[in-house]
Image (tube, rainbow, N blue to C red; front, side, top):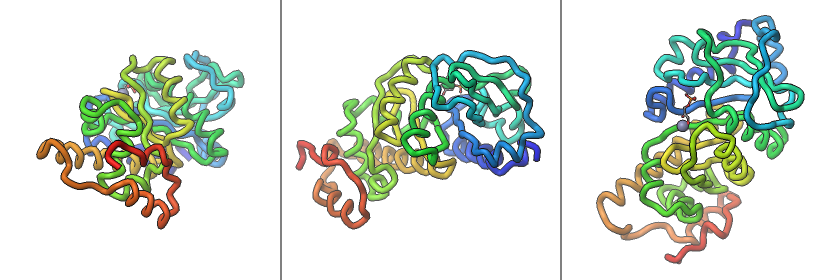
Length: 277
Ligand code: 13P
Ligand code: ZN
């Protein structure tokens, strides 16, 4: 089978298109990657070439030795993903020492993987270990309301988590572990990769202050849904804060505890404690 016909490939192209329609991917902003399963790799093996040069990743990911991932290209314009998928995406293989990668397919016209490759691979290594291989997708987007909140709220995980959870019940259901925060850092560096990786041990979604979000999940639906839910909550909060200096009423800690009990949500008590309760 050709890569462009494979279900894992068409699902990622669809996600790129859906997400940029949401306004989360101006120009080339954001990137995504999916670690492929053995059956998916075998299905497209006729289309893969293992003769490319090995390039440094910038971080060491021995936990991904020999793994194969589909990933967006650096500078790829999201509007063009569906029209030119073989230029916008590529498939890479991680070397046995976990320090290098080579291109097996795609990145047409001399392209290369996203500048956030170190963050993608470092986080894949964490989620692969954390989930026993179940989590295979890493997603970075630039959703405006979450970014806007990083200028307004203190960069405190308890404050952010609690504010978002309060906006609608879905939030605690979709990200029961809360939201992690990484302060502003230079994009594309091993430093931002390391800081995010530390947070992904605990959270499925991490805010990059004044930049965007990093989300992990089983696949495109989980990652898209996670960002969609957090971003909707952020948009409601921005509307509320635009109308009144302080909320007149909001669900309290006990309301969230009650919901956690009914829906068996592992909400951490540290996110339920706040000055207001
Ligand atoms: P790339 O075009 O290299 O993927 O970079 C976009 C981005 O959002 C960097 O943080
Ligand atoms: Zn970015």
